[in-house]
Each structure stands twice: as structure tokens, then as C-alpha cells.
Length: 450
Image (tube, one colour):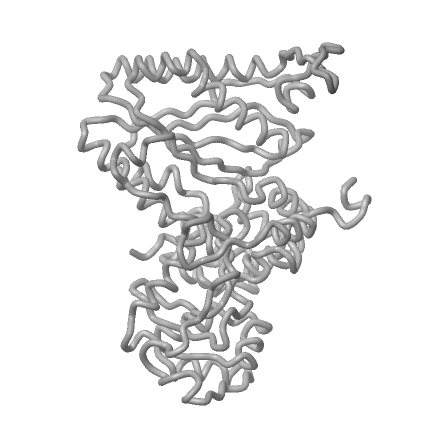
């Protein structure tokens, strides 16, 4: 199924230089800019650029064209190309869940929760507070009583973020799966969530007493600390705008609601008229147009959300509907490559040797190559000639026939990061994770102060 973003090709941007920029060009351009901002050690800087085999090939798939033999970062936070693929996979997963729950005569409610914020608030503090507040809502005694009263089977929670005149604006998108509620019970459920969220936000100002013990386990003193970093700095307010509550009309609407971060339509907003609050992709687009402050904000955001989990499922929810194990972000980002591997005849359109591929990357023609591949190998060759790129030369005995499946299958091991137990892919060691984090640190004190 083609994504929403692929339907907005040739949608003009606000810069005349990109008036005829396609959706694929737009995502690839933002990905290149994200790699430049985050530095060479970050995995997004290698995504779609670095070879992980001796040959890079272009294949046709059911939905378009894709490369095989290049690194894939699988980051939903910093890579718009991977985010679009991951979001589509997550949306289909959630649609299956809601469809099964609807067939079991249950209701699905879409809820948005947020708090008041200001330009002086740090993004790390806001994220910490929202995570703490949500934990208080679902794990407290009142949360358990609310679960029993309304028959809450479980939830799916997503974290989203924008930036506006009042600074960072993080918010939670939640799907609550309940029993079939009457209209009055729905209204009561809405008021109960709002009341509980307001209570939790207000309690953030209170402090808790911690006992300080020595090496022998003896209590030496008692100190009071704030419950959250944000609560210790300023008053947390919640108003009516902090809550959005509505019944999901259908499974597709629920899937789009909870998984819209990174979706085609969401990223495409950067190509259109700007709203008061800018999404992460709009910040990245502004940074590519010379906005240094937007680049600094994107760098800060990438550091705070490094390796964070975007979608959280309630424990036991997937098992209840026999949905199986959840796919990792990296697996979803490589869906097209795996699909191309299954097409044995006529799937491959073109292939590049190391010399010709590095010229394609340097001239930022990856998206154009994919578009040309949809027409045929001759169009790809004409594209290379127009941009004065040397045509690739191959040894047939080393790389196999030009059509059909590759004799030498590209090795993706070591170039993607996935949880243990995912099969063919390999987990990168912690030293690489530390190097990736180091490239997100400010270079000097002046940058940190800014």
C-alpha cells in the first residue's frame, strides 16, 4: 500500500529552489541534513549512503523501488525515510489490534494528554515529567480502580513533540481499549481521566522525603527532593486544552492517530504552509534552509530521545489477541529490502560499483535514482550520464547476471541495531552506542550555553 506522502509528489515547498521537489527527494534531503547536524558517528549520517556490500543494486518492489546493499539506521526519531516506513508498519499493527478489539464488541478511545510549558523549560525535564505522570496515572490505586470500572483491557501509548513560541510541546497520544461503554459512561470516563491527570500534574510540586544511609546501612539524615525535575523548577498547570478525548471511528483512524509520527502525511507538512508549532521534520527543513536555531533544536531533541521507545504497549495486550512478537524499528525499516530479496526474476533494475555509488551519494541523487528505476535501467543510465557520473563496470563472474537475484547477497550484519533474538541481524556493542552519544554532545562550552 502506497503511503500518503508518496501521493504528494511535486508538492511545492516555500523555497523556489525546491519547487518541483518530489516527496522522496524531500525525505532524502532531510535525511542528509540530519546526518550533517548529528555528525559522522551517528547512525543516521550513514543511512542510505554507506555501502555494506561490494555492490549496491536497485530493485523494484510492490510499492516502488529500493536499494539493497546500503546501511539502514532504523531511527524513527532522526531519519524521515526510516520513520515513514516504521510508521506505516506500526499503523498496520495497531489497525489489526483495534479491528480484533472491535470484533470483540469493545470500544477504542483516542486520548491526548499534555501539560502547560514555557520557553524556559528543558526538553529533558518535560519528557521526564510526562513519563512520570503517565506512570502515576496507570499504576496508582486510582488507576487500577478506573481500569476495573470501565473494563480497560489495555492501552497503546505514543510520544510526540512539536516546538512553538512557548518552547517544546511534548504530548502523549494514547489508545484506551475498553468494554462497550454507554454514552454516559463515555462522558464519565473522560472526566475521570482528566481529573486524574490534573491531580498527578498538581502533585509534581510536592516533595518526597528520602532517607540517607551510610555504608553500614544506618540512617544519617533525611532530605526532601522534588518528585520531578520540572516540578522542582516551576508550577505545573493543566487546563481543559490538555485533554482531547474521542471515540475511534474505525481501526484505520486509530492506527493513523497513534502512529502518525513519521507518517507520510505528517512529514509532508514541512512541504506546506507552516502552523504555530513546528514538527521535528519542519525544524529539520528550516535547518536545511539556513536556520541555525532550528539545527540546534534538532540536535537537542536527538540527544534527549536517543534510543527512546516511541510506541508502548500495555503488558499482555498483544498476547490477548495473539498478535505475536512486535517487530523492531530496524526490521520495519528494512521491509522493502527484504521484499526485494524475495523477488527472484526481474526484480533487479540496476547496480552500482563502489566508484559510481560514491558519486551518486556525493551529488545527492539517491532519490532520483529510485524514481528513474521505476521507468527502467535505461532511464537510470541516462540519469548518470546527465550528471556526468561514470557508468559502473562489473565482472560477471563476481556479481552474477544483471537481472534476477544477486548471486552474492549483501550482508547487513553489523550495520543495523536490533534487539537480541531477531535472527540474522546483529546487535552493535555498547562502545558504538557510546560513540554515537559522544557525537551528540556540544563541542564547546559556548555551544552548550547557547
